Image (cartoon, rainbow, N blue to C red; front, side):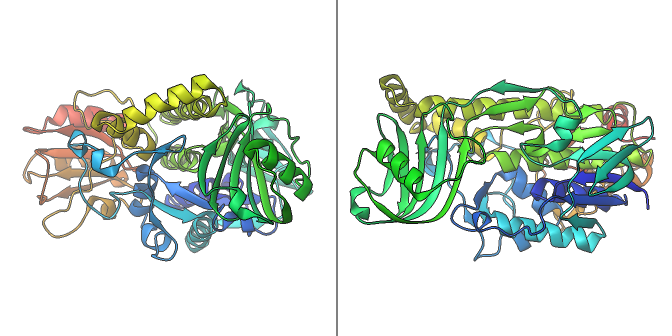
Length: 488
């Protein structure tokens, strides 16, 4: 069988992308190097991930949020910057006039195991083929296909997408430049047993060599500014963790057991391009940075949502010229911003008087209404906007979750992966506009309980607004905007 797309990597990004492609009817194969997706590091506490509002909206718009956000698996996620929390009561939500209350209005937290399980089950239900214990080794691409070699087998596919993590084989074999900055620190997340746990106070503490944060006795995150000295793949022993903890905390602590440990650095790199012919990158394969602030998973899932419908339209011959190129134009700047956001947090954590002084200033700013709103916009993802042109302030932003008069919501109307043209003034000529794009766009002429003064909205399959108007719908402008995203 020849597959339309081969996705390398069955993590959340690869699985979400596979679901998007399969939703559009493509034949999709996912190859995953690891035999078993389970790992204690994917469970609480270290597997906990905060899902930003754009991510929650993506799961909601595909009918996955209820499975993901079960009461025993998820809870509201508080926001912070380098450990400095912002107060929800200080946020001026009036600055977000196009956000409406609904199922996806707040961020949540879930563990990685739950996220992957939900996505793997959805992929299987859609008919995605997933082969575990089989990782991409090499590939060659021609004008019309890619030959992918894995485990002694060769798969001839139309497209290859690397979602295979920060050490991506696809990125390396594809000749993608990976530019950025080297690490300043080594981070550790450990579960240990201490002889005298009271020697380490609960909470976050900055020290002359780094920072440590004890969530509860024996569950510790710590950072040592050692230039990222710990070698990749080096064993993390009890003796090593004890030595680092003593250096960072300044306390003469003694460990009797090491139950779990994972390490990371603040290395920040990004592929200078996300596409090379028929090979594309998404997620950590395209960009890596420290886990500070919990943005990595959200960034990768945003890549998958943006790429999925565009690649599917390209394969199906339903893409206008240059559609696939907008994936890089829209997502590369978002990745660059997140890398800088991560670097800024590292700068605030450096063990220096300058950083402590800067931290005090940031705390003061975060405690103001303007400051809390700014950090909330960035951390929660509310400020995300793609440059699409157009003069309406809603264009390029996530579509409001309108509740129509019959109780249907915008998010529900996007579950089949098609675009959506909402006409709040039935009888306008917009039905004809939607007809230009065939089955790619659903036309719904219905009033909303709160339409925010809008007369009509054209929404892309990923939930972002391509065109909107407040007054009498301008048929020509609607058509012009739609033709950019949907083929006639």
